[in-house]
Image (cartoon, rainbow over all chains, first blue to last red; front, side, top):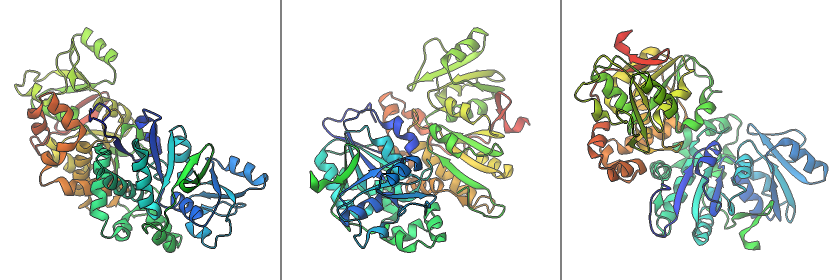
Amino acid sequence: MAEESSGNSNKVEVIFSPALFPVYFENTNCTVVVIDIFRATSAICAAFERGIKSLITVATLEEAHQYKQQGYIVGAERNSEIVEGFDFGNSPLTFKDGKYKDKTIVLTTTNGTKAIEMAKSASRVVVGAFTNFTALCDFVEKEDKDVLLLCAGWKDRFNLEDTLFAGAVAERISQNLRFTRLSDSSLAAINVYNTAKDNIYRFLSESSHRKRLSRLNMEEDIIYCLTFDKTNIVPVLKGNEFVTNNSK
Amino acid sequence: MAEESSGNSNKVEVIFSPALFPVYFENTNCTVVVIDIFRATSAICAAFERGIKSLITVATLEEAHQYKQQGYIVGAERNSEIVEGFDFGNSPLTFKDGKYKDKTIVLTTTNGTKAIEMAKSASRVVVGAFTNFTALCDFVEKEDKDVLLLCAGWKDRFNLEDTLFAGAVAERISQNLRFTRLSDSSLAAINVYNTAKDNIYRFLSESSHRKRLSRLNMEEDIIYCLTFDKTNIVPVLKGNEFVTNNSK
């Protein structure tokens, strides 16, 4: 849609895989929303909701090890499980007792932190999940820039849960006249979301990642990650760390 | 879904961009269906329906020029228009008078021939369009291999019309018990197709490529490309050329 002329409205693109980010990233002056519903971005929102001070994401286990050696609290997940020797993985339930309150923590995951790494050259990078849906949409609208909804997917493959969330955001913000330039990917994601929205949990019953997590007995995580608006915090990248939108 | 164990059933994947082909291409023993509804694969089906002997696709204008210098009939399209100095572009209407009957022709297009080039290492590469839908699905079912539905998209971006066709094929072949391992991308494409199928033309009214072609006064092409089952020919790659499935 880059060639479309549409007055002052911002474009809304859904990027279905981190491997496609370079195709869509034309201009650093945009808001990138990183989406990894199962479970990195849901976990990051949970961590801030339970009071962490800031969060550093890294793409590789090597970097995660280096932070660990420096004394940081470090989470690491690969293939849906905690990597041995680290403090936690990517379960949002990790944070429910608030034990990392006021700490800076470090995280690396299979898909989500890789997507964040790719997005870092954008002028604004935020984390989105069903759990911060309304706060995220409000934040994106206030930013008033082109929006790239970056689905972390699974090892560069398309996945349904990230697409559903991207569709929910695209639909919500497109009701604002500042965000009416919907790409084909946005139209498709909205379409899928509208079919699923009455029962997202059931809609995902055939999805690959929900099956993967169910095999690992992670039903409680799945239900948590599909709950709307548990927090009004939007994790925002400042320099090399995520902080909350309220700490500006 | 690679890790799913599902007996003897074949998997069905939709690949939303040629840039994602390497992510999904795990095994050469598969059927790749190349899809570029507006308009390369619709044009290729039309050319065979009107009696061409074979078709050579090339990715670059340089290669196309070389064939032209050797005396071939060569089509070349970039950004929806015929490239100067070539015999035609990617309009299926080019072929309606049958003037290239029994000839070998050469074609390069913005998206479709690039996707074909990527797919060439698969054991079976075929061309799909609404115009050969039923014949294509029958052919894919007989091949009885994993299926990759490769959407040519627009300059590596997702597009709706290729997705709709991929969804139509995925839905049709998944009714055959040999093709029940649907990936998340297949589930999403089927979902979008089911919403659109009662009026595909209207559904695409907001899509980027239909708008692009409408600006270029190509309504007749659009309507042609969205018509089911105008031919029972399936163009099949043999060596470096496409021939018809009936010429085996």
